[in-house]
Structure formats: C-alpha cells, structure tokens
Amino acid sequence: MAEVQPTRMELIKLRRRIRMAVRGHSLLKMKRDGLIMEFRELLEEAKVAIQKMVENYNKAQQKLLIAMAVDGFPALRSIALSCCRIPPSFTVKKKSIMGVVVPVIKREKVARRAIEKPYGILSTSVRVDEAVTAYEELVDSILEVAEIETTIRKLLEEIERTKRRVNALEYRVIPRMKELERFITFKLEEMDRENIIRLKKLKMKKAKR
Image 1 (tube, one colour):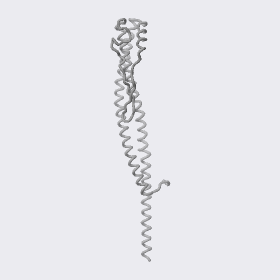
Image 2 (cartoon, one colour):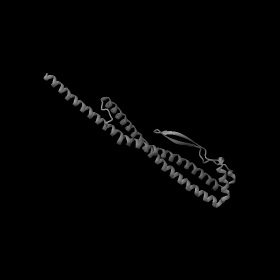
Image 3 (spheres, rainbow, N blue to C red):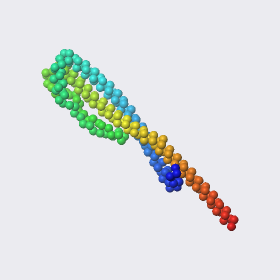
Image 4 (spheres, helix red, strand yellow):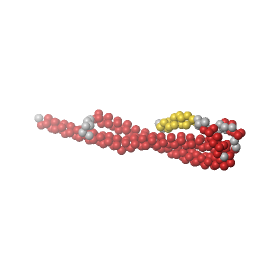
C-alpha cells in the first residue's frame, strides 16, 4: 500500500483495471460453464460408445470361440495374419470446442464387405467370416471410444485451467484491487479534508488582519 501513489489519476487507472478484471472474470465463468456442458454431453456419448464397444467385444469373443471350435486354430491364424497386413486407415484432424483444440479421427470403417476382405472368402467358412467381421466392428468401436476419451481428457484439462483463473480473479486479484481502491479513496478523502482545514485556517488568518 505504501508504494501506491494515492492520486486521482491512479484511482482512475485502477478502476479501469477493476472493470477489465470483472469483465474477464465473467467471460471466463461463461467459458467454464460452457466447457462443463460440453463435457457432460461427451460423457453421455462415451457411455454409449463404451457400452457398444463392450457388446462388440463379447460378440467377437463368442464368434471366435465358435470358429476355433469348428474350424480349428490353424485356419484362424492364417486369416488373422492376412487381416493384420492391412492396418486401419485413419487421419487425425483438429477442431475447436470453445477455444479448446481437440482431435477428430477421420477413419475408414475397418469392417469391410465380403468382396473387400483381405483373404479368399470362398476358402473360409461362414463362422470364420463372422468372427472376422465381429473383430473389425470391435476395432471400429475402439477407435470411436479413443477419440471421445481424448476429447474428454483435453476438455477436463481446460476446465481445470479455467477454474484456476476464475478463482484467482475472484478470490485474489479483484479483492486486492478493490482493497487498493478503498485505500486510495480513503487517502484522497483524507487529503481533501486536510486541504479544507488548511483553507479554513488561511481564511481565518486573512480575516484577522
């Protein structure tokens, strides 16, 4: 407080800074609330996507067990090696959610039509084909969950950063500036009172002459 010059110009500047801080605090709160809404919507999407992934996993396991029991492991192994030669095709782009840059996975469906399978479908059984399709669908759902989870993680990080900034303004920065405003106002009023008393004394001296 002692380092602050209690002048009217300083008070004007300080009040301008307080208005800017209050405005910034309001905007940050709006951003925080918007991010929380987006986060909640994504959580619902994640629940649906994870449930679908679990269902696809159980289905794929079931189809695999049936194919292994009837067609044998060697047949499945050769098919698996053929499928592994073609990795999932996808590109990662970016989009902005309330100023937060999040990844968007643009991918081709891993699940292929029968004629697009990387092996001769005429030489395999329906059971093997169903197992392959089930695992392709599982990979698709895993990629979908990965995209949503990455977005959720980034939103959470930004929500925490925004919360810290809101709290800093609300509980530290703005209160300190308002306290300083009160101090300068008090000092200026005190100086005004002293000036009034000084002027009265001067007038009294002049009156006595």
